[in-house]
Length: 96
Image 1 (cartoon, one colour):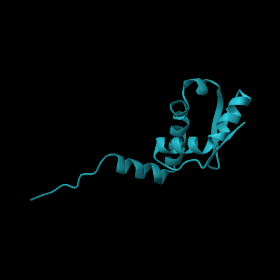
Image 2 (image 1 turned 60 degrees about the vertical axis):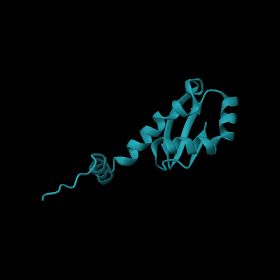
Image 3 (image 1 turned 120 degrees about the horizontal axis):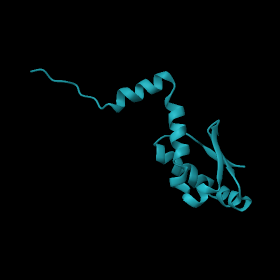
């Protein structure tokens, strides 16, 4: 009897992304897109530009008080963001 080896479409797709070097940029974009769902809409509205450099999420904030408050919760935020994308993308967050 002939038996097929079925694989989920994600496996070959993830392999292709990894081989072409597109997996990390895709995960980084997903992590940045997850910011509003992690911090909430109000804090997200006070957030300026965001980018990732050397495993550090750089976040521009318009409020010095909010910058101080979020700095105290940096470890938790890092953990929640990485969990959203199911990968270790960032190791810290820097607010400026």
